[in-house]
Image 1 (cartoon, helix red, strand yellow):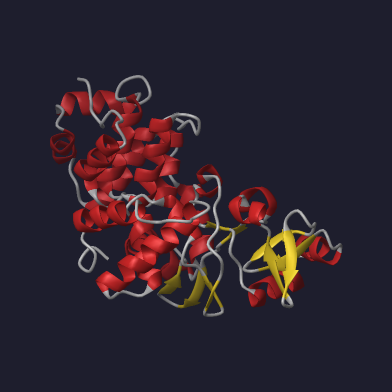
Image 2: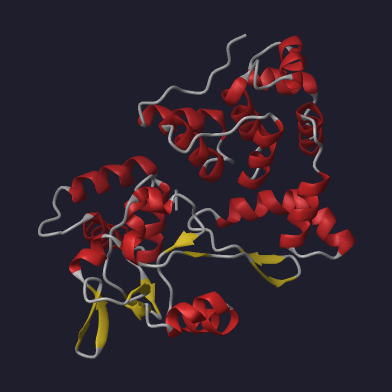
Length: 323
C-alpha cells in the first residue's frame, strides 16, 4: 500500500477530494466518493484504496466501498467508538449469516424470532424505522444507514487456520505484519505441541511470566536484545532501566511500557498481557490512551518515531521518559 499509495501524497489527495464531495448524507458516502476518485487516479482496486484510507486514520472509510458477494452495498455511517476493534464488523454476507444461523443457537433464535432480518449486507432490527422493501430487496432506511451501530448486529471476525503454517487472520490492513509477529512467538509451541493458533496463544498466555521484570527479560531474549542495548534504545541509563523493571507503574509508567512494546515489536495481544503485568490499564475514555491503543494495534512494527509522529498529528503528548 505504501509503495502504490504514498502516505503524504495520499493524505493530500484524500483531503482535497473530501471537500469536493457534494450531496453526501454522511461520512460513509463521502469516503465512498473519495475512494472511487483515488482508485481511478491510482489505478488501484477499491478494496486497496479503502484499506489505505483506513490505514492512514480515516476510520469512517470502513463504511465505504464494501462489497458482498462481489456486489457493492450502500455506504453507511456509524459512531467511530463502535468500531475501535479491527476484528469488529457490521457487514456480513448471506452465506456467512446462514452458517452462523446453523451453528449458533442464539443467533438462530434472533433471526427465527423475526426481531432481526438481513438487509443489504447487515443484520438489522426488523422494524419499519430501520428496514424497508424496494423492488424485492431489503434495504436500510435513511436513519438506519446513518446509524448502523445503533440498529445492526456487530460481528467479530475470527482467525481461521487454513493449513499448517498458513493463517488467514482477516486483518483489515496489516495482515503480513500481524501474522509475522504472532508466529514469531508461537511457532515453537505450535510445532512441538501440534496446536492451532488459538490454543497456542492460550498456552503462551498461561505460561507468560507473572512478574514484569521476568516478562520483559523473556521477550527481549526472544528478540536477541541485551539489557544495555535495551537501555540505549530507550535512551535511559541501565540503572534506571533496572529500577523501572521492578516497579514500572511507579517509575516509567504507561509511556515506558508502550515504548518497550514498540521496541520489542510485540503483537497487540502480548502488549495487553505486558501492560497487565505492569499493573497498568489504558482508559477507553482518555483520548491519549485511545491513541496508544491504536499505536499498539496498528503501528506496533513501526517504532517509537512513527508512534510519536502519529501522536503529534493528533495534537497529543508524545512518548517520553523522565529519568
